Length: 233
Image (cartoon, rainbow, N blue to C red):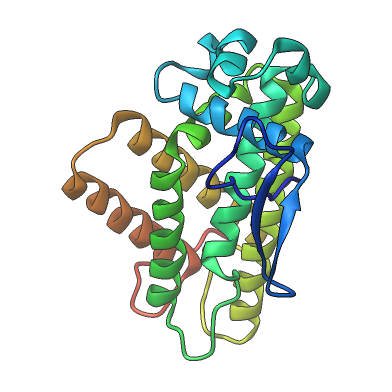
């Protein structure tokens, strides 16, 4: 999965761009091909500001990137493949910003969910057009659907493992013993809540209300102390 950051400046007549090499404190040259590949990704994301992903053509992307059409197909088979890579990169940034799904020592469940949801929501706000377009595309693009499913499955596994650890330690009483099933449903809910929020772009007050309600539902489902609990046997 590509994780290259967008170059801050690209010179059309140069063979590449220079960026700091963090490991050796020197500046290294980015290969021209890497610059062109990133320019395609950046161009697609800029196009999303003007039109839905389904309406974006390869011509739109190449014109925005300032490259010829054949160059596009050297790097990507289709525009959907570009979107898939953007979604994967946005998801990586999302996961990196959270800094791990383990509940930290001394971290209450309320604080744990505040960290997860607050950071996740900010990541969605930052890359909302990519995330919304990606979720829409799972309905018609099999490759992107498989990629999204893989990302969500990994997320669900990490959260379910945390729920199981907390339950085994007697810290929570989840609504059922099917921890993976509970987490999967909760994750589906929050993804759709974020999708709706970033599609409609409501007021900040409405977004805060959504996050507060999501947190209440998660606390209740996990069966944290002092939360409403109606266990399903």
